[in-house]
Amino acid sequence: MAPITRDDVLKALSGVRYPGFTRDIVAFGVVSDARIDGTTVTVRIDLGAGNPAVAGTIEREARAALEALPGVTSVSLKVGGPARPAPPPASGGGAAVSESLALPGVRHVVAVASGKGGVGKSTVAVNLAVALAGSGLSVGLLDADIYGPSIPLMMGVDERPAIDPEGRGILPFTRFGVRFMSLGFLVDKDAAVIWRGPMVMKAIEQLLRDVLWGSLDVLVVDLPPGTGDAQLTISQRVRLSGAVIVTTPQDVALADAVKGIAMFRKVGVSVLGVVENMSYFLCPHCGSRTDVFAHGGGRREAERLGAPFLGEIPLDAAIRAGGDRGEPIVSADPSGTVASAFRGVAERVAGAIGGEGPDADGLSAWLGRG
Image (cartoon, rainbow, N blue to C red; front, top):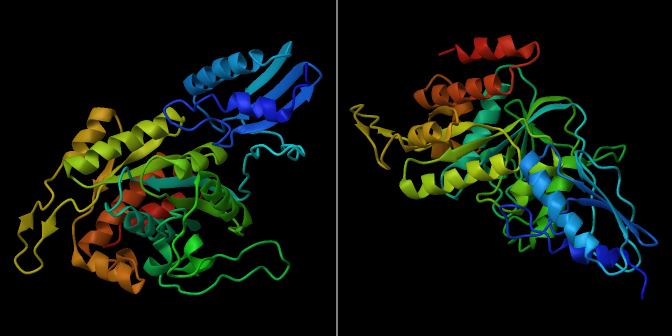
């Protein structure tokens, strides 16, 4: 009988699906160590913060797959928290394995997500970051929307980032008190990013690891829409303080928002709450209110699912105009109704992650302005 190889082990594990997803645990990069010693196989699966139910399912199915390998007499399987650095791939190739990412100096990481595109997720992420920074908190913003990066336009920067003189990494840009980075700064402006899942995951990991974020109270991560590779990469490789789900009042958007909430809960990430964007329209001339896309669906779904409701953001042309010219509405019109709505969301997010540190009082004081 031929000796067991690492490729044999990875092939067996590629038959184990991550619960709730169509992809397997090898493709998702959570197999962080795979070693063979004669007829004994040792495997470590790193699920980050994890979800106990998910971990139990993966452990049972992975053990069964490994014990079914011809020639295997003993299986040592560890499923849990941050992994040891993985050994280099064997000469025979196979899927890459990876280690948990450490973000030294970053106290909280908050993901901003949506079930579908076009609901204003990036607009919420940008204005949330600027609102938090306006309080005196140290804030970073990562554009992890690999296929449609919007942060360069919304933050008003169109240039390549600089490299630290000592070669330690990429220097983030800073505007409106926010340090930010996007793949959009690293590829041609009009280029289409046509990447498969593993490349997406690698790009996000590099943005997290290679950018010199420094000391941050909060890192806001703008995720792409949906429930795919980028979302799982962030939730499994970084210890998230929680996720903010953005929706509009329409039923079609709400249905996808529900899926987003379910995904984060499935992987053990706290849902900080739901934001209803484009909630209503106030006429700038007469002040009358129109519920263009219906109204109140975000609050109802949040209550039904037991998630906090973070606030309503009105539909306003000034939000679009500010985003197009690179000045978020929270900065462009800080005393306006829309900026006040975003500051309310920021206050609730800060409260949800604990409002830790000396800057918490500064946040409350700043939110009280206007």
